[in-house]
Length: 281
Image (cartoon, rainbow, N blue to C red; front, top):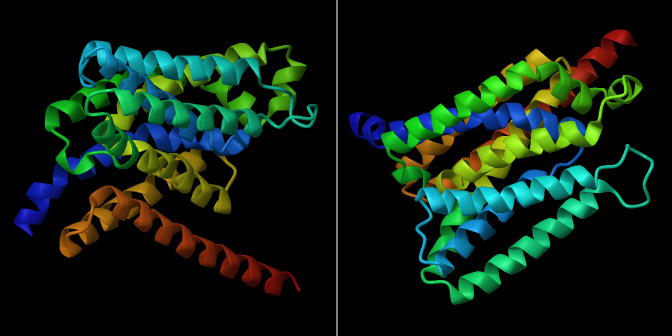
């Protein structure tokens, strides 16, 4: 047990820091119906990190993060300007997001073929290196996420209204695309810092799965965030423990643990619904 705590405590704390931000942002993503926007932004950040290698810039340097963030910001701009009111466009916004993801993925492959250590960077961008995360990296991540969290707290009414009640935002005359850009801009910063630690797969899991579990049981904003965080804490701890016991890759195991938690939550939801219907009948 001491060995387990010593090895897995930093990854678990990193998971909790990531979930504290990504779990909240995931509620917005699910509510907006843009499920794959996180994959697209994460892939844009990965393209930026890989492009930095062409200029002999290390991914963990300030310039390296600037490259990743710059590409993620470009994605944020594209997503905000291509947004349409739900049900009023022949081209779903998710289609634009998918195109950005595919093009960014292809671009990353092309750049990695010419960049030094490109293949290694691709692998890290996909699976992450969360098992080897250090305390200084966790503190840096937590510090930036506190700033992003404060930003979202100050503008929470605007962001939540745009995500959960678009009709009200339009009726009030809000500039939806502007608020979308601010949301995706901050989202891009969070993703840029998360990719080197967690990787694209785990980021998508942190953003989507806890929120999907939460939406199975409630629509109240505060309850959604709480259920998301509890779900992520349980799944992260289970994934880390199983990874240690079976000596398997940590990131993919955490993803599978989240899948298991979602499956259990689905069964619970079905059982609760059937019981409610039986009582009503």
